[in-house]
Image (cartoon, rainbow, N blue to C red; front, side):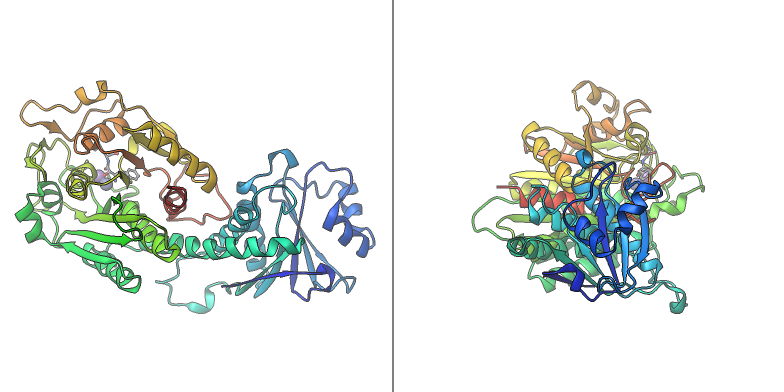
Amino acid sequence: MEIFVESGRIEEKITELLSLGLFEGEKELTGVAKHIDTLMNGVISDIIKTGDFTAELNQTLLLYTHNKIKPKRLLLVGLGKKGEFNLETVRSVSGKVALQVKNLSLPSYTTLLYGEDFGIPIENLTQALIEGFELALYSFNRFKTEKEKIPKEVKEVTIFVQNNENILFVQKGLAVAKIICKATKLARDISNAPSNDITPQALADIAKSIADKHSLEFEVLERSDMERLGMGGILAVSSGSQQPPKMIIMKYKGREGSSPIILVGKAVTFDSGGISIKPSDKMEDMKYDKSGGAAVIAVMQAIAELNLPLNVIGIIPATENLPSGSAYKPGDIIRHYGGKTTEVISTDAEGRLILADAISYSKNYKPQAIIDIATLTGACVIALGNHASGMLTNNQNLGKKVIDAAELSGEKVWQLPLWKEYLEQIKSGVADLKNLGGRAGGAITAAAFLNEFVGDYPWVHLDIAGTAYTQEGSIEKTYIPKGATGVGVRLLVQLLRNWS
Ligand code: BES
Ligand code: MN
Ligand code: ZN
């Protein structure tokens, strides 16, 4: 998609379609809306008087301009109430307009920068606008062979700026937004791909090609390395599969001599549950169990393209979780990297076992912070539904940074407590820990398990089981099509951009 930025007289802009945002419940049109209304002989104010178009959020109405102005079509879009306008409004409305344009099979359109005179930083507004249309227009077509049945792509969007002095900031926002959207779409592509396409090896290959392109240091710990290092968690989880496990490590160096921030992403390329096998209903969704790893790979790409002045290491434990004669079993006791032992109660609580090895290993880098992101527990979906990721931390300072980044990026998180009481639920009679703490507080006991491997390093855990892909309880968002959402990419990039 090509994105242009222009300013000048909007009525002179030759374009297939111009989208114009209107606020709900405004008595009088103002600014650009009033200007266009006048040129259009008052048709917009007439429509509003009828009550047919109230400008509630995401309502649209298509008009033909009949040569009154150069844009051929005018798409009115509701911005909702003025007092509720924010960046999420912009993402949502921008996505809505893009989908309408796609429905019309138009190759290009022009959009105004909604809320340009609202006092919101223009870079952020631009970023949200671009996220809206770029992410709404995403679709996963790689396995469709009837290419003519795939809707035509929107190839060009022009952002029309009212105030000339804003152009520089729009350009800045555009540069950032392109990188973030590209990364989000990469994460979606990885996450949407089925497990017969993306095996741990294939995931390592994808990560390697990104690392090569961006001069990241790259390394994969193979099964033999894991055996040498004593990574009993990932070895156990992978033991039922024909596909060898991979511990993928990507290093971005943007700042000499500073200790790294570690991102750990769970990449179970398929989670059948193993011997503790899952019910078959919706089991196909467990291809999404690699979404944390997908997000980390995509974030590594984005921060390299953004040239952030930080050192960041991405660690992605990748494996399948399958039953077989060689699979690990309930009752098995495994020894993690670093020496702690775990009694396996359920082979379906595999995420924490592979993350334990990865988190323990990450301490070798003496990090300034560890952030892990994982589709870890169904319990988190029960607790928070599909509208927020669970956030747990041993460091409220770091937690606050994540909350701030969530606010700006629109990727909601909600903190759950990590009181030491929860640790009691996962103490084992025969090993240091067990991998199941009963049904009560399942998202928290999973985090409490991880916490045992973190030590004193500042750490945040993000449970994205409810947000990584659209599910029964998800509400439709214009810029989040069905399937993988790419959650975590916008959040973590925002966090890292804010870091210093
Ligand atoms: N990958 C699942 C968690 C999950 C559930 C992700 C729903 C996305 C949607 C995880 O490995 C798992 O199976 N967790 C179990 C843990 C239980 C055995 C303690 C769960 O949530 O049921
Ligand atoms: Mn599982
Ligand atoms: Zn899993």
